[in-house]
Length: 173
Image (cartoon, rainbow, N blue to C red):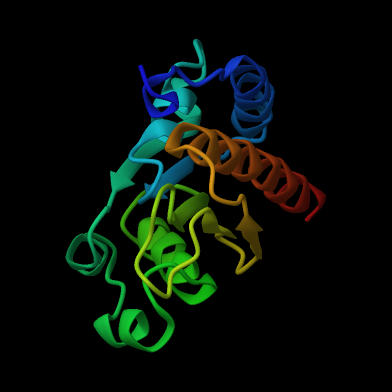
């Protein structure tokens, strides 16, 4: 069994998701996700939180550039100009998820979870969280060349931290 086949230890992420989604629900907010390299892992984690179904609206898994364009409205020229793994594309994914949902907060993740192209950095992940009130939080993560599972787990942990930050910003308003 290779390290890529090992299960991800999400126990800490599960606790964080439960706490954060509880805050989302108590604030009367809803979340949507737009995921690429995590392949729906974040949406799965959030929908595993018992009793918080009203806080999660929907999830988009947009692995290809074409699906990002078709499902989220990410302009093709944005991908050409900045690359599919970029702050700009992550923001466009989050904004597209927000406009194609009934959510108040959208989280988007795009990155290279494993070996990438010749000029691409393995472990590079961009995450964007966008709130309805034009609030944005972005993060560029350099998780290094590890196994896919580890990069995906770290991406989920970072996204949950950013979701917590956005919830705090929206509650303060």
